[in-house]
Length: 203
Figure 1 (cartoon, rainbow, N blue to C red):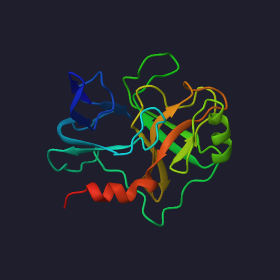
Figure 2 (figure 1 turned 30 degrees about the vertical axis):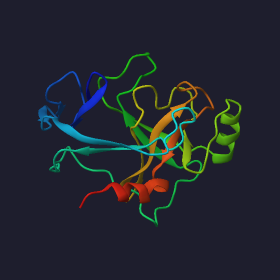
Figure 3 (figure 1 turned 120 degrees about the vertical axis):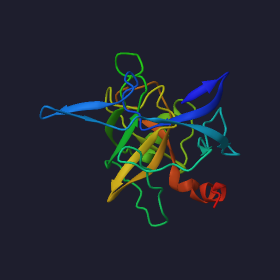
Figure 4 (figure 1 turned 60 degrees about the vertical axis):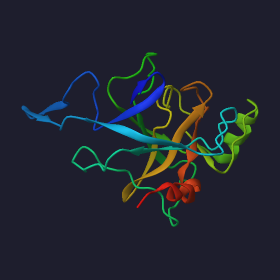
């Protein structure tokens, strides 16, 4: 993500290691490299009209890019939940990715991927009520194991479920600090916003 004077101007696609121009791994003595990442200008930012910065309700936004994106082996879209998408139950494992802060306290230069369990919704609601925060059906909670969590710098990133295909179940929203035992992160439940998302799509 590139910003100028606080304004988002472009997004980078296909990035894995921010310290290298081209990402490579060595496998069986052979070096395998990905295509270079691409920077794409942002044409428009579309925030949810009912987003509340204080309560963090409706914490979801869309970016309209200035051109169509060609799919490659390293740049692929995640699927959006359909009407028959089966939401995860407590204990199901979803995956969160990002470049956010790690246990060492600094942001990661390499994209991290973590499997975390969906947290019981009622239990989550009760816990965050002690922090005067409301958890609604438009949100879900995941994590709660020590040092296994999304964190600062991951906000807006994906919480994905593998159900034959990778599907975007949640968007990283907020939490009670990061990685505390028995304190899950809070995610915006994407399925609840599919009508709004469809309304923003240009054909």
